[in-house]
Amino acid sequence: MNREKHSFPVGLTILSIIVLIGLGVMIYRYINGIGAISNLSDGRPWGLWISFDLYCGVALAAGGFTLAAVVYIFRLEKYHPVVRPAVMTALLGYLLVILALLVDLGQPWYIWHAMIDWNIHSPLFEVAICVMTYTAVLALEFSPAVFEKLNWNVPLRVIRAIQIPLVIAGIALSTLHQSSLGSMLMLMPYTVHPLWYSPILPILFFVSAVAVGPAMVIFESTLSSKAFSHKLDISILSGLAKAIPYILGVYLLLKLIDLAVAGEIGLIFTAYPQNLLWWAEIIIGVVSPIILFSIQELRKNRKAVFWTSVLVIIGLMLNRFNVSILAMTMRPGYAYFPSWMEFAISAGLVADALLVIWLAYRFLPIAHHEETTSVKAS
Image (cartoon, rainbow, N blue to C red; front, side):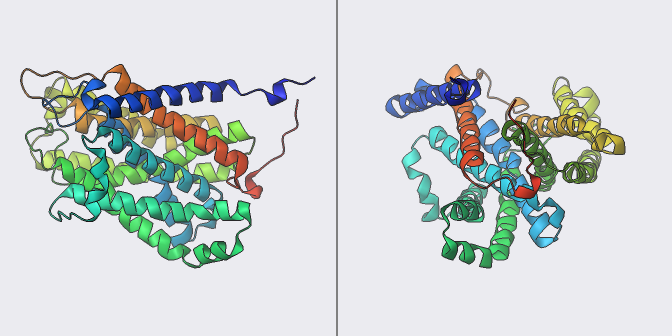
């Protein structure tokens, strides 16, 4: 008897264990308070969850609005096969941001008050409204996959009729809050290190998010093709890779000009050890991908395209960690390193997303037929 056919995959078992550990810690947090599971203090404004789950999570979900704009606004139908996976990844990214905030907030049951207690002078108000609204927009953009599976033709026709307005709304909302996360850091001129603090921080946040969007699509599409036996045309991956150096080039130029205008360009050589963090994010996530993705032969190699996209993602994460936690000034007498339970919650949320992606590919029409190839069982 073939028992392997009915066995639970090892990878899913590991993910399920991580999810359960994270869920247990979250329950413990809600029973005993945030202080029982974290090393947070009054020495800094936030910790791991904000830097990883919010600042990195929102940026890494940028593939949703960038690919939607490319296909539905600029009419580049070549990239249509990757729109639905990109929107799904973006939706999960935003749901995880919301879940992380529910853990991080001291009184999470008040999270919905942003809808009724408007503080229009606060960047956080704009972030809250845009995240909630854009999550709803992403859910509507992704809903055709569910309606197709259930054969619900009427709601499917409705969503398709309003698809372009939805895409435009998603682009506007995502543009607003990708940049407003940078605006929030502008409120801390004496806390954020001069290598990262800038009046154009909102623009830098937006441009870097646009750059990482295609990289995340390459990353997710490559992994899903391995896991679910569908193969995306290399020309799609190559086309996405070709656009990234131009966006990263604009980003690098903006950063260097900003430092030069501020008279702080010399800090990249003298501000030890923060300058090492700056050079790490620039070399790993900007300069190296610009060089590698500019090589035509490399863009035709699936593995090379995948691993170069990983460099872009690492560089984006380094930037968000640098600007929001690693290079931030702490109050004298305080120290911070995340507890294992803080890591457990973040790992549990990521594992949640991976399990949902597996279920979506298994039961919903995520991969288009034109990108699917049959694979014989060995």
